[in-house]
Length: 266
Image (tube, rainbow, N blue to C red; front, side, top):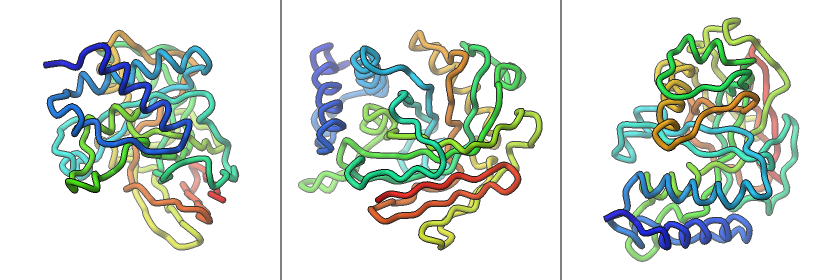
């Protein structure tokens, strides 16, 4: 049975309070054992309805694009979340130690749109609607615990989607490129944490082509009456695994000729 409107609103309020107070809540998948992915997106949308009273929508993020991450969660599809204006940072930012709960980062390619995308779009449609692409780092955070201490149960896809796909921030590099300038499947990054290489990856790790992520997103959003708007930023999905970033973490994501992104967690 789908969650009731009251249950969806209660879950959304709990997640908004968790973000504001930097205190995690328990697994929604335990509280509501029969909740579905549609329920999870409804909880995410309920948060959007409340947040947009005070914040502009910056864009969207695509997550769980790699087969390894999908298999780990027992799913066969990516997920998505909302980027808000207060989540945007520029390369070189120093983030206060109490700004997030359990921050992690991922390396991605950001698409900035010059035209809307909606429904059954093609790869060519995505490229035509893209103003430019840029190097980016996504900051992840978890307002829901990753694992329940009592049962040992880990968060599932419905927890992640309800929690805005674990999205918390985006750090954009200053470089801008026309999307046809690079073969985005071969755009990669060497990611260092405190000067040590901790991850490497290529754009092909995202559904074999980061552009395909936006095709998927436009189609998924249409099922919920949404679309990607001109001027919005879309994070196309990570091609590395998440990197834990406790206080004192210096991050450098070096994309070679595509650009570079740096940040520090104080």
